[in-house]
Image 1 (cartoon, rainbow, N blue to C red):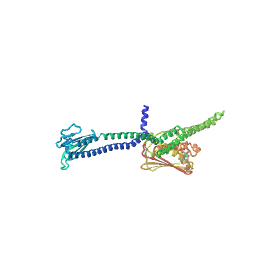
Image 2 (image 1 turned 135 degrees about the vertical axis):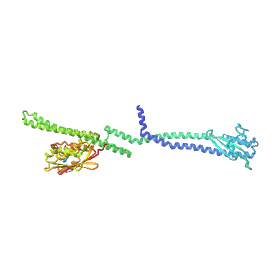
Image 3 (image 1 turned 90 degrees about the vertical axis):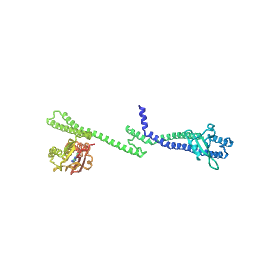
Image 4 (image 1 turned 180 degrees about the vertical axis):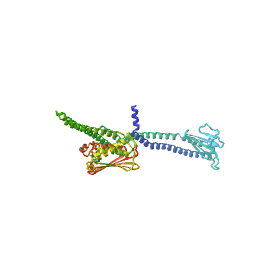
Length: 479
Ligand SMILES: Nc1ncnc2c1ncn2[C@@H]1O[C@H](COP(=O)(O)OP(=O)(O)O)[C@@H](O)[C@H]1O
Ligand SMILES: [Mg+2]
């Protein structure tokens, strides 16, 4: 089972595939060339042999015509020449007279028999024929025996010769080619294994480096610059590692911030309680005062936990956990304003809502209400001007609705504008705490707005006021 998996892994590897490609393309030209060479040699050798035999046969046919051999087959000069040709070409000669009778057969099998075949018939008409039979491995030639003076066909000469010699030579050549190819294949394989190993080395190096980084060895950075591709992968992985590191750091920071924020009210309560228990016979008024302080610390602890819970819920809530319904945004904002009015009145702040048109949008009303409440509450809270005001406006186009929260409060310093959405970030820690802030409000608002695929922006001039603008799509965009 395990070895099967290993084998599959090996067959799938880039190295193995490269080796196969190298061997294939390395051997292909050799194989094509050698088969072509052997074939070419064979064809050429056979055609040369054909021409040779034909020349010899022509001379013989002229001699037969001149000497009157057709009338007297015992003529020694011709017979010896016929024997010679048979010996040289490992063949058989038939001499046929004009009555289609075989008057001479060097094999002595068919003498005096009648021969009728197409080739002989064509040669009686005056033309030569030749035929190569690759299966039985012989060449057969027929040519007319013509009278020198009248050019009349007196008979036909049929010569057949074996091509075994050519065949054997070609087979020999083929064997040599196979041996050479095998040797070349061996060399190419060694070369291919080496080159494929060299090619894939950067990738193996990369995998090893990533493994090392994972274990915690190395500098935690990848740099494989053998190829442009590996360099690009290295750069991208490094970027990924960096963002993971940042994420990890921010998580650690968050945890330490949470512990700190939760501990502060507890420390105060402990101090208050200790100082009460430390005194014997403390007056009731002191008890009452300290208990009120303890209650307000409990209140604060409660608020931090509530905010934290809604933030964590927001983080965890994938967008699909939103409870999207069609909501009348004008009514939603009016309700928020009504709820915040008492706080505004308390601080003597004029709170105004201006709706430019009726807006209905697909949103999660509870979460959106939390986000907008945070913005408007901030605008009220961070405003200690005697003639303070907060203007909220609602507008829309065919794609988005826009909420603008504008105040003439204390403003946010420019260097803090980039940080206000961070968890627990407060411009002025003590002032914010006094007001009852936890530093989580804007983080929650931003989460909600991003979950709705919207955008939030802040503009501020210190000492003059702040503007928050929110843009939310009217139709909820599913992921
Ligand atoms: N409208 C505003 N005017 C001035 N400062 C603001 C305003 N809104 C937010 N801030 C600053 O941004 C910080 C972060 O706001 P937030 O996340 O709501 O936390 P907090 O719980 O302190 O209100 C606040 O502490 C405050 O310093
Ligand atoms: Mg706030």
